Amino acid sequence: MPRAPSIRSQDDPLSLALRPPPSETEEERTVRLKDETEAKEASDKIDEEIKLEKQRLQKTKGDVKLLLLGQAESGKSTLQKQFQLMYSPKTLESERASWRTVVYFNIVRSLKHILSTLAAYDDMDDDSDANSHLEFGDDDTFILGEGSSSKRTRSGKSTAFTNAPSSSKLPSNNHKLRRSPSQIPLPKSPKLQPSAHQIANLRLRLSPLLSTEESLAKRLNGGVTTGRGEVFVRSGWQVRTFENGGLVKARRSKRSNTGHGHGPSSVSASGLPPGLMLDEDPLLDDLSALVEGSKEDIKDLWDDPTVVALITKRKLKLDEWSEYFLKNILRIAKHGYIPTTEDILHARIQTMGVAEHTFDVNIHGKLVTWHLYDVGGARGQRHTWVPYFDTANAIIFVAPISAFDQYLEEDSRTNRIDDSLQLFTQICANTLLKKVHLVLFLNKTDLLKAKLDKGLSVQKYILSFGDRANEFDSVVQYFRAHFLQVHRRNNENRRVLYTHLTNVVDTKATQSIIGNVRDSIFRGYLQSAALV
Ligand SMILES: Nc1nc2c(ncn2[C@@H]2O[C@H](COP(=O)(O)OP(=O)(O)OP(=O)(O)O)[C@@H](O)[C@H]2O)c(=O)[nH]1
Ligand SMILES: [Mg+2]
Image (tube, helix red, strand yellow):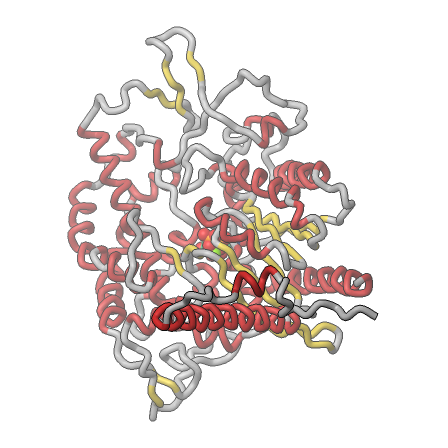
């Protein structure tokens, strides 16, 4: 039987290519051997990394990987906190103190927003010709004048809704632009005349507190502030918040645990696990004193008739977390304030990239590790999601249906619900995600109710809503129908879409829904495991 040629055979082209030239000098030999050693080291390192990655994948093969997707501010991180509260409450306790920085930051930002809106109002008053080419409709729309008085057009775009099936579908040449709140100049009305003197005094007295914004942003960003003053946080920011404050040297407290009693288990006054105490934190201590000293001014600003009137007339639009913290200012301003669980659920900080959270979930007596991936939802963050698509078992897509009157921070011409629908279309159509268990949370239902109760008209912002009843049930049904249709049109695999109406700051309701979702994900997971 002929022998198989040896790999070192004289005729083997690889051996020939690797063989040193016959005329190699001693110096060239040294260089070659050094290069070969370096190449081998690099190759070994790559082999080792591949081995580790294989081991890691092997280790997590039986785990559930759940992606939380949706636009910015949709409620993904809040939902993640609810998972944490349910499956890993101790970790939430250990992070409790770090949320104080976020709460203070939210308050300072909210005050700045109120004061700058008031200033814009003043400027408008000073400059009566400003924006004279714009006219106001009674519904916060703007009408662009074409010439002086003749035909007026309303320009703009709406994609998902104008394409949607609807009895009141718009003709394609009907363009109407809703302006983002920040673009709407304030009208002059004698009823809204600010008590200029009072506001000027408050602005002055609050200025030391307002000047802490940058330091707080730096603390949260890990020492970096982005160009536009945005604050994003990466995974693990809670620990870094302490490190940036020079607080890593947590030491044993001789004092007994002074339980605060707000969370599911008692916490020490520092918010750290019982028995541990932080070193002093000059920034937060100063801030706490400033908030305490400014509480009456903050309350006066919040109660000021001009501010109240601007909010009522929707000329000043505050984010939900602003309202929550300003309403609770007297409690938050108390000495030794530690955020309650509800405060943590309302605190707002943008996620950067993808943050992984791991929980052990007990399902019918079996412990399964769940990896929850909480992603940044702003447009500039969405490219970071893709590497997680390959291995995902399930997705919860969070769509805030209260946002019908809101526009993207990153693109003030795009209506938030429209953006959510477009994003959901991309997720449903993505080939990597075709077999993934899909759950849809139509979120912020509490805020939707509140807006409808105040009389806000959906049709004013979503033209195709037409003359349907401006009531909770019909609005929800309308939005739900659009999401279901997107799913139906991109569903060759006949996968089920599980839909829930949610308010993820409501712990009791959300945890019951999480239980449902967990069971449905696990059923699908067991079925697919049985097929492998
Ligand atoms: N009232 C109310 N507030 C909510 C609800 N869901 C989220 N919020 C608030 O909305 C804000 C934004 O929520 P986040 O969870 O930070 O949003 P996100 O989707 O993680 O946003 P990014 O990280 O920027 O992608 C927070 O202040 C939350 O408390 C809800 O159902 N009801
Ligand atoms: Mg987030």
